[in-house]
Length: 307
Figure 1 (cartoon, rainbow, N blue to C red):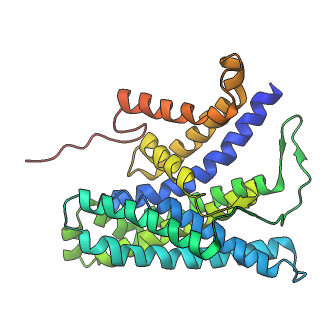
Figure 2: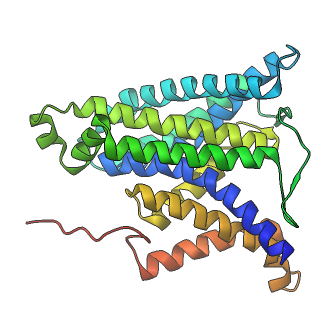
Figure 3: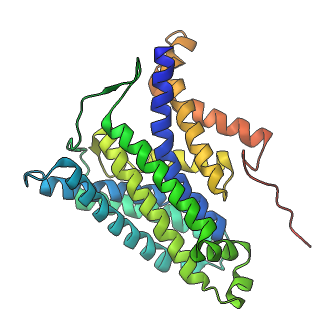
């Protein structure tokens, strides 16, 4: 049971990071029906930006949490500017083009960002400095680190803030109106271009936070680190129901739990044939089952097109 609860805890931490990135996917898709496959690379840029700031301030004598906070702010600014530029330069000119064109553009942007990051930060993996206390906290069997506690707390705060923004603020109403019908929203005084840009900026900020948390939790950064988390977060968004904010959160948490439990018990279930590094198969098997039995996702709704 101790192993079980430890894996549940690990799954919640992992799922929290997936949920932050999945929200960026689902927000953009909900408004302009675009899968931004470069979103994982935004996470990577945030992590590498944070590493650059942390490395520059490592010998400054400031407390570790201050350095992390400063690096997080810099990562958010850089990622927000990057995603704003991507939307304006790469996606906006293709907004009325066939769906295949922006999809291919998103894939190309992903490869471009990886290549630029490899040129700027070099291809070798870099250790992320330890900024927070490493002494584990014993929860009566399972243990959790200070960094993991921070991940859970920050994620819960950001998710609550995002739900409030979308459901209670003027910008949130504009987002929902634009998602429903951008032309009618424009007639009502909403500026769809501004709303779409704001959505990309908010998604980038969430991805930047996830990137810093990912780097702090796993202790390493590199130019290709965004591909797998981005793919998993997209899987989480589809699992929960793409375009549904609550679905992205539920999908991310479920995916993290499935992956963590798979890593903990995969060896025993297969008699040692498959190790924990094959845990990814559980996540994608779960996705296949959900899409087969409920194609709209766990919290998605069937939408009928009017003739």
